[in-house]
Structure formats: C-alpha cells, structure tokens
Image: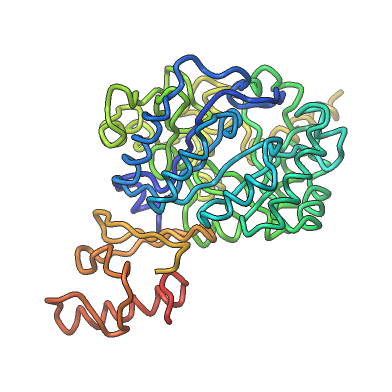
Length: 347
Length: 75
C-alpha cells in the first residue's frame, strides 16, 4: 500500500503548489486567496529563480503554479523557463484571459507544461456571475487556442451550489473543445469564506456529484496533491490528505504552508527568506504535525479507508479543528440529509 | 526513461513519477539501482556492477514491470 511509504516521509514533495502572486485581473467570488492586488513584498525574480534551483536540487518533480493569476507577473515566463531548463514539469492554473497565440506557442515549445483554465459554469451567465462579465467568452477562446496546441489542457471548475446542475454540461463542453474536465472542491478560504453560505453546494448536490463522478470515468477531481480520476486514485493506492507529505505550498512572499487552502500565520511552516526549502521541508513543526495527523474521530466510519478523515483545511475553516474530521464529507452529507428528512417528517 | 516520467532516490528505494496519469510507483529497491541509471540508454540485460545473480534476476523482473507500466521505453 502506497500510504506506507508516504507516511515514512519523503525526501521532498512530489509536487508543489506555488502561488506566485496575489495579483489578479479578476475578482472571483470563490477565490481561495482573495486575490486582486499583489501581496506586499512578493518574491523578486532573483528569489524566485533561486527557489527553482532549490526545488531542482531537492528533485521536486512538478510545480503547480497558481495565484492570483500567474501571468500577471511580468517575469512568470522566465520562472517557467528556469523550471523547464532543469527538467521540472509544470502545471499552470490560469483564468485564461492573458493567453494569446504567441504565448501558447512559447509555452508549447517547452513540452513540459500543462494548463488548467478556470471556468465555473457551462452557461455564460453562471460562469460570469462568479468570475466576472465577459470572462466565459475569454476562457473559451483560451481553451480553443490551447486545444489546438500540444499542451495538455483541462477546464477546472470549482463545484458550487450555483453550477452543480451544470457539471454534466461542463463535461460535454470540455469534450466538445477537446480538453478534459477537472472539478475542484469549493473550500471556505479567502473570498470563498466570505461567500461560503451563498456558494456552498448543498449536501444533496455533493452526493449527486459524487454519484455522477463515479459514472464519469475521465473526469478528474482536485485532490490536495493530485488531479485524479476515481480509477486513477484507486490505482495509485493513496487515500489521504497529501499536505506536507506529497505536496506543500509556497505563497507569494516566500512563506511555506501545508497547502494552498491553509495560507495563514497559524499554518506557516517557514519563510524562504530565512531558511532554505530543504530546512523547512525537513524540520518544520507544522509539517511534522500534518505528517503525524490521525483523525481518530473518523476511524469508526465505514468510509475511513477511502478518505482517512478528509480535508483538514475544510475542518479548520469550518470548525477551527484540523483533528475533527471533514465536516463536509460524504458520510456527513448522508447524515445531514437524513436529519433534515426526519425534521421535515416531524413537522 | 519516458520523457513524461521522473525518478528519485528515497529511503525505501526509488520513487517514480509519471505526469501522464499522474501516477506514482514506490519501488523497494533499496540502493540496488541508482536513480540516474536509466537517464541514458541501456541494454535490457545491463545492470549496475556488483549485483549477485539473484539480484540481477529480481531487477530484471522489476525492469519488465517498469516497461509494462510505461515508465521505461524500449527502443
């Protein structure tokens, strides 16, 4: 079982999420990092290039770039080139609005990049209500450019109450454009926390999505450490949160965190301005606490082997307790619906 | 090694990564096989120096597995 090796501790993450800037030309209502203006003191080009070299020395296989909108950084393609010249594979999460044919051609030349374009609805109105007026059309144009290139491309959709009914249509849209679909979980961090009650899917929607996903073999979901179909997840033999074990997050100012959804002082593992990447990965107490995290309260659950307690970030944001198990897990969705039905009957 | 794959040494042996899946392969090879052994073209029956016959046979089986799973390419 692969979990055994992961729990022994790896010498470096398999992949790493690097939020290169908080700058973004959009103001999506579910944004996990409240992106908009750049953060004060974002890493300089020299610092970023030094980090790339450190990640190469540590033999990190892949860097997943996000933000903010990564292309808002004028030096972003220089950072990418530094990764690719060292053989590091990259994946870019972008809103697609800053891609044009010339940029796509430059990116394709590396043969080491994959791109996820964010779209949050199969209908223009649904997507634009979350991401802003005119974004749907720009994202579609970007996906078409990418689909015509050799770059592995996917549409990334965050599942919300507003778009839950459109996920099958998103799948058809992605297929019609010649790309894959990845559906990410909506988590209550950043502006997502401010708009949690408005945007969160209901338990019934989460269960319906889970059922649909099981029947839709090529749709990937955004686990904290990989983008995987349900079949791939079984094949990989991993069924646990990968934060601080298989992956970690570097924020725009060089702070390191367990994952992108826990970029707060409480979970700061260290600063790359004070320590090396390896020192933080090997010695951070925060990372150690995640590596030894066991969600004992979930152990009696019949789904425990499939999730090992779910997402600690959701548990933290909703209950201030990473040990308490995922409050939005499928088992709790079932319980919640059953409770609602009982209440309705009693009334 | 397939261009979409990477490998590195870990305490238990070798960790292979295939970005196409993505997939991971945890191989309990200890120090038998250096992680950079397949960074250059090798013959099917070419092994690191100093291995016993038994170790070579075990490694041969493992290399077949890597070929089947697409981590290595036969040319």
